[in-house]
Image 1 (cartoon, rainbow, N blue to C red):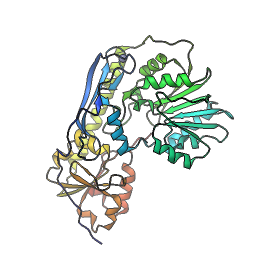
Image 2: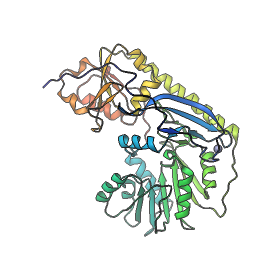
Image 3: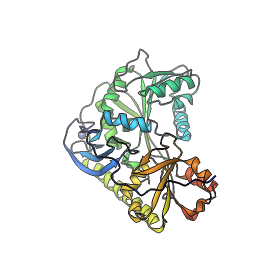
Image 4: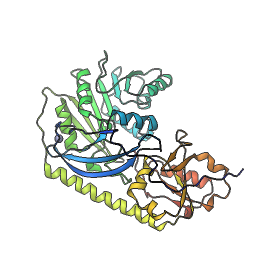
Length: 410
Ligand SMILES: [Zn+2]
């Protein structure tokens, strides 16, 4: 069978701009408005084209008092609803990271027999399911449909469907875990205070977040990614935890991905005083920025060397493609080309992005002589997987643009 692919030119104005999905946000630590602008991503389109407006401005600011870096304006509840309907709330942790976290919990004697463990932001329960059978498992997640699926999959885990900011439970937990969740939340302070409220005197809280000190991601959006609401440093995380009544007992930096893990217990007093070394925090951002610009430069170099013809296949139709449009010179250099998008997520099949049709990856299997097209891989986490799939279809590497030398996945 041979079918014609619906190649189209890129359209800039496929969706409208709106300010309805974003709201002003106060400093997540001081609750103040005093901030300075650091960077802005203008007219960022989140996911596919639609009749509803989909373009927003993303701005990153720094609090003038405590120096924490955060998105402001950020998605509001309305914006998040639309975003999650399309993207879901899983951020795609690898099995390896989950296993590492659990063996670390075991090593630190935090998974004792018959203790009650609560995972906050448990998603489908897969992290809890990897914990030993001798602990009693609970998970809280806001997405009802995810919880329903999770219940069917893992019968021994008790799932709570609730908002992290105000859910209540009669259970008292020995251990609460929250891995790479805090940085995604609109109001991390409310969540940490709620966890304080539902905890016993001796409850241990283990939190992991990426921190600017590790800024090791070479991806297009770098450490200050559009997926995070707050961009922590060791210091800003300390200040936030202290304000919510948590005292850090131990901390650990994870070397193979950007992770900073802290073990906390309830403090006897709430410390509202903010400790900050302003110069150190500013240096951290400068250092990160310099490195990020270097990786953008090397990505653009690879793009300049790759020549596309009249028909180009973009592989990956997620947020990365939007960043590829906004942050690199690819589409400016390829304005003579027409495009289709290939994505293996069936939820995207049949939709479009900036006027370009999204087809399922399987479609390629019905096309003869694929080497007459050029292929652009637009994904960070799945770059190597996509590359393997393209090679399985006998596409020459000279027809494929891969923009990252190395992938560092959480
Ligand atoms: Zn502040």
